[in-house]
Image 1 (cartoon, helix red, strand yellow):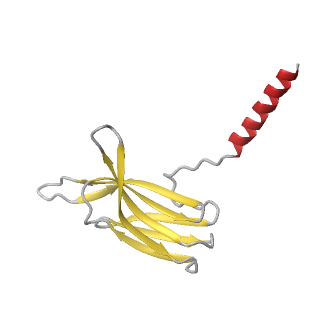
Image 2 (cartoon, rainbow, N blue to C red):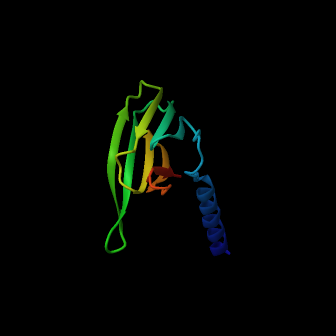
Image 3 (spheres, rainbow, N blue to C red):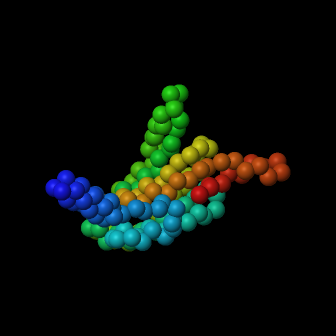
Length: 138
């Protein structure tokens, strides 16, 4: 009988712990959970407009990271852009120019305190007539 109580107690604690964890989808824009509010929109010519309201009281880190495949199936990443915005700047807007980046898979990551926003993007050529304009795919 004591074993059943312990099993029940362990299952109850596990259930509470799992339901307390927050899951967050990265595909939703604008991202307005908690104290870091992000809006990311594509502009023309491989530019992304970032608008942020930072109520975390912490500095905000903006980065663009390239995801690369390796020979053995492991993924490596390299940061191609990184910028910090002071905690005192509670509202700001940035235009991220991605036109110099090669085709490939990237993600935009914005962090402030414990808050984190990640948006995967893909830069690829688009064949239209004889021109080869490029675009961002969400």
